[in-house]
Length: 131
Image 1 (tube, rainbow, N blue to C red):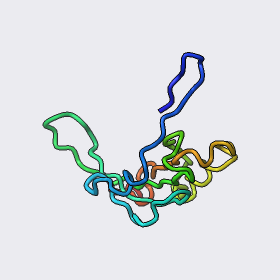
Image 2: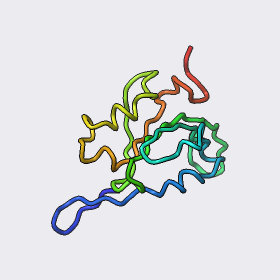
Image 3: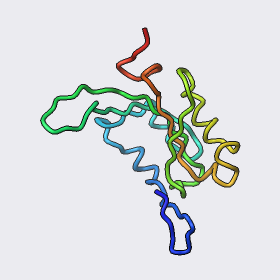
């Protein structure tokens, strides 16, 4: 989370350590390859989420496919950054494209955990909306 100092500079809080990601509650998030959670490596999983938040309402659940490229420096000094790559089929390479030097800059590429989401339920997310 970026914060502004009295001098007007922006500072960042580091992301949670990798052990946090390794030990996340599987009811909330299921890693496809939990052994690949390591500095500089990308892996994916499913975020289990309700489609609403009002109390006493039984909302349906969705499983959103999410990929994370972990920063080479851990815990990621500048935190997490969410990226969006466009249409269906772009998620698998999205974290490398948007998390690369061209988009983040060479000074930042190893300092963020880059997170990409399967948008619009067109890939591996459930339910799928592909017809």
